Length: 86
Image 1 (cartoon, helix red, strand yellow):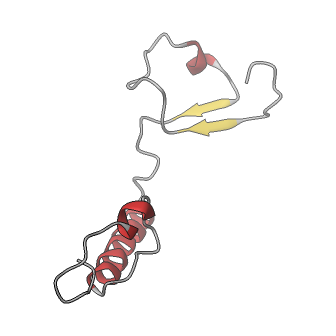
Image 2: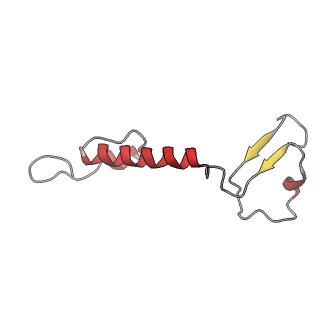
Image 3: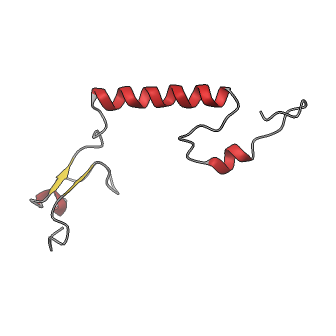
């Protein structure tokens, strides 16, 4: 960021949170840092709720949710006595 090889950036997640008030990155003129609330808009939260509902209904229908972050776990779920997956 200091060399300006990246013109500008915005981050919502830092390696250590909260970011210390004296952290040098907070003084960079080409960096915007938010306190891990970048997704806290009404529109984003509504979309997150819709996605959660879609994922839940899909899973309850026995299908892998589109936004499954660990599909290897889904693939390895147990088989019930009737031969269906749990």
